[in-house]
Length: 81
Image 1 (cartoon, rainbow, N blue to C red):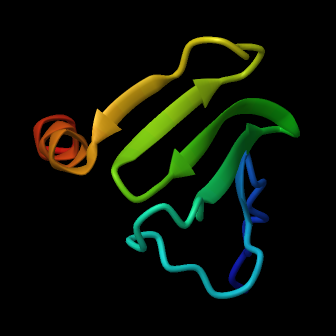
Image 2 (tube, rainbow, N blue to C red):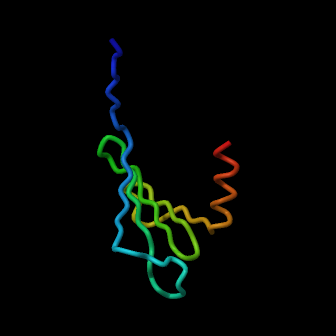
């Protein structure tokens, strides 16, 4: 008999989508907000917009970590190997 392991979800990611979004439209103010949680504890919020990607760590309302799309792609290439 085969045993089945129950997986426990540690990290959850929630995207708040107001319908269809065009992120590249100039001055649209559109963006995509993604909440990242671990065991229901907010780790931070990832904001995707036309010109940049921002990471807002939990509890930080003033300073975000901001990267242009090009710099963000380069960072992923470097750190995801």
